Length: 92
Image (cartoon, rainbow, N blue to C red; front, side, top):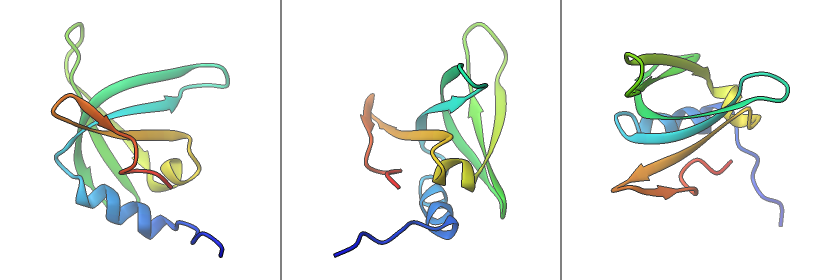
């Protein structure tokens, strides 16, 4: 039996479900560089979603990502609940 392939609408539904929740994300900044951030899913829009990242050294930062970034694994997201990471919430 084949596993159902995820679509962009599947990603939108999951991101929408976890709006307002804390997440850890790993994103490709360039060919050889990754950055790791922790923040809150702030806004969910038709083509993108935004994450508010709070850092002790810098002022708050708002980052935006497309749903296709998550689908193609350019951005990996893990849900954080009570300090524990859940790697299955955004498993596509």
